[in-house]
Image 1 (tube, one colour):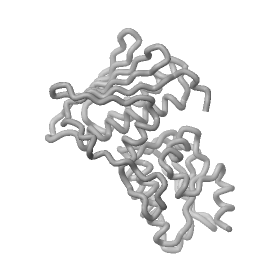
Image 2 (image 1 turned 90 degrees about the vertical axis):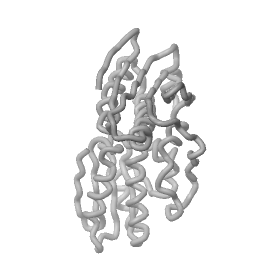
Image 3 (image 1 turned 120 degrees about the vertical axis):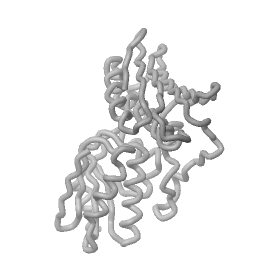
Image 4 (image 1 turned 30 degrees about the horizontal axis):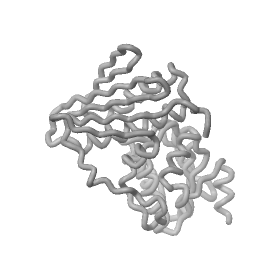
Length: 148
Length: 112
């Protein structure tokens, strides 16, 4: 993982290895702490980035090669903005199924929670395909962060 | 992640220290599964020192819950920190797995 900071933004360059996620989490925690963001916001941002990276690294590539994933965190006023750029295959949202959060233990399906958690914890999730790249932008409000 | 397993009179208690994410969720689930014996009637996961869990970890908890349910054994979680508890609530897991504020509370719930 490579790290750089420009204009107060945190820029991380990762490779497609799940172990990169824990290392990135420490940088993300430090970024949030330096801006006095609440642990709840740091957790929500970490979890969302983790879920997207886990998905991309586990299912997003058609080969076994090393791929680069760029991650940028920046604060724009009262909003924390996260941009994740990867060169995996295009994301097919038609495969997304909402989990049944009211199911009984017996009926409850094992998967499908990751992207649902991202949708629930972020204020805005945007996906764009730009040529060969996936660009995912997450936004989380940092105002009123002390409220429940 | 560190996992400590204690076998008490009424329950097998698994305490987790650190993170459960996509790199270790399978190991976590397997470590618990191999520790559960036929005679165990209840399992408690103590998450007091669990700093982070992702959907991969939730899946491991759900698999354990389903396994215990099939064996008619009890299962409960206790001592979740604020953000970890929120993830369980958003996922709806709080409706299918009993969550207690303290380990004592979880243990005493087994008597009922």
